[in-house]
Length: 441
Image 1 (cartoon, rainbow, N blue to C red):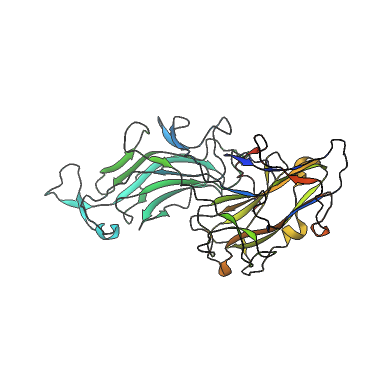
Image 2 (image 1 turned 90 degrees about the vertical axis):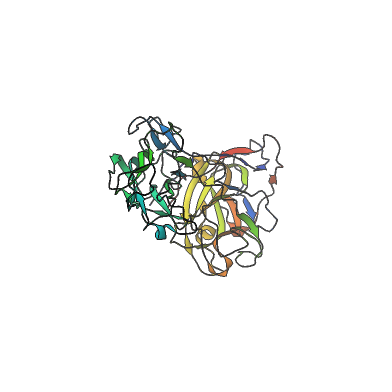
């Protein structure tokens, strides 16, 4: 369980539109106010963003704490002097395709051709005795990542889909050579497609200072695939950067931005419009690999001693795949993690009561006096996506957001006489960085 609040250290620069308030500086004790959006008048200052866009690979070859010479390292010095990793990384180090069997066979699976044989030595194999092929993956590795949350997987392709060969390396491990008895690749596709994949979740890393690794998250060296029966080396990357045909760092492509207003009467809290993160072509499913952020307008006000945000939210997020939505609040100086949720109400009218009846205190982040307030909602999905869900309600829906100060309550009605929307102009946008910080879960 992760608890607490932290000003997020963020990874991509984005514009944030402001909503302004004209108030005289001498007004030391402003009256409580309420700002409300029922989602029935268009985007109304809201905007959304795909936080996977613009990601760059973190795997690179480096001499720092290398096994010998240079090693592949998924890490950075951006956060501290001893190296580490950040939140919500999804990095891959892929070996080039490895042909484990030299016989050209088209449209036949490796499961069929694994019974074929190859010569035990290099060079011309014609007319020679053949031995069984048993490709083995071996390497040396180290890691330092948050136990139970941030993992490095060794993966191979099976019938076109990458599967995990290990349970995931996590925690702290010094350099270890797994030796000749590595991972058996006999039953996987030919050509062999093998990769290392490092994944960190939305909090607790060197980026936010909540998990301080030493040279995290993962490093690997002496990556080799060889035939266990003959010892013949099929692939070897012992000194990165010295030759062609080595491992290749990569990250997944941009997943797309799926937040949008919908006009289905169900499941809107106040018909017919609500925000939803999903694909209209299949309303029971939210696409995979998302980090989709939805930002409310940031409301400017003057010197309130408390600020609470209320909203209606509907969930259809099954618990099996670690999909979730994370909530963040801002007082104008970064976004702070509030909570993360998943669950499946399995009902068209299954709107949660906590956020609407109790609300979330975001004034606490202002140190006693608050001048701005806004919310951010980030929908995270894994490789399988989120769903399916009945009733066309997969994922999360948001409706009727209220920002109230100094004890005002949503049901008391709007008090927005002193508020106005400022049209964007150069310098009116506030720069923030993509919020991927602390969550409770």
